[in-house]
Amino acid sequence: MTLAARARRRALSRPLRAYLIALGPGLVTAFADNDAGGITTYSLAGAQFGFALLWLLVVTAVALVVTQEAGARLALATGQGLAGLIRERFGVRWTAFAVLTMLVANLGTTVAEFAGMAAALGLFGVPPQLSAVLSASLVVLLLARSSFTRVQYAFVAIGAGVSIAYAASAYLARPDWSQAAHALIVPTFIPSEAYLLMLVGVVGTTITPWGQALIQSYVADKGLGPRDLGPVRVDVILGSGLLTNLIAAFIVIASAATIFASGGVIRDAADAARAFGPLVGPSAEIVFAVGLFAASLLGLGTVPLSSAYFACEAFGFERGLSFRWREAPVFYGLLTFFVGAAALFILIPGLPLIQVMFLAQVVNGLLLPIILIFVMRLSREANLGDLRSGRLLYPVGWIITALASAMSLAFVGSLVFAR
Image (cartoon, rainbow, N blue to C red; front, top):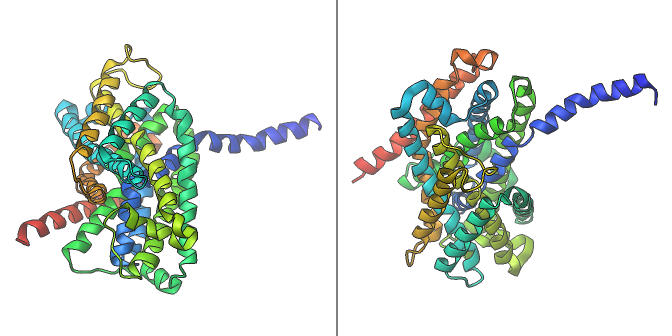
């Protein structure tokens, strides 16, 4: 190969290398979004309402791309996470309010991950109390030894396998694809409190408060800058916009074509496992348990970690798994506290695990507008330069924030005035 040919090859490989380096934040957030609460909520949506909520996945896909890109732009321009920018721009009081909002939402999500672990292990006869202790010990050990970064890929791979299993089950169940396509395009509104509750839950499990903080911290930690906007945008679109909601759609369709079609309901993990029936038959519970276990463990390694990062970044403490316990005692102390506090909830006898996982997503949906308001306010700061949200991204972002706020207010209003 001549020197000129080698030079041309290197020149062609540079853009590809830039894209490969930037890949990660959107894809990891996508898989983390489909955690125990996500799998449970989408399964309940399909089992209870059939295809009626598929249209919402199109709306949340657009909303997720817009809000995640706004957060990614903040990190690309400033090299900081969300909490640090809130403190710089709005002061300590508003930072404390943002931290409190994030921690309340994340606590609910972490409890949902423990409930997912308990439900998965419960299919093998493990008591919830024992699963909570084992799960908490395993997660803290993995994170404290900085080994979670090595094992998370295995759980992402399992999650990808289970996602493919949902797609295969949806296909083998022979749903009415024309009806599903119609439901995907034409919104269906059912005037009931149960439908509104499910709508809030689906939004809350797709566009999460912790997801907004995670992608910004991830981009900043990778050391990406303004020149990486193109690759990061592709990563966000592929991960947050396509992968997250494509998997969600298959879960809804699989549950609708099996459980809803037969007039069944989901009361526990064994009921939810029936969505895999067309694919693996009697082994459905095993497949569901493995997938739920992997999704829960990935979530347990992500959500408490994002909580500790967010709190430490807000108030200037050392943070990161690269530090040892004695170098970042507040970070590891908070991480252990968040995991332990959530695990205590699972020790409550007779706790309805499926309902816990679902209601945690409702809490996410109710608190989401608060975090989005901070993101959108920051997205037009002058110091962002060319990475400020533009004429399209900025108004669309505020429309999404307004719709999320209206949804939360409508749900709260339905609870108040229905009595």
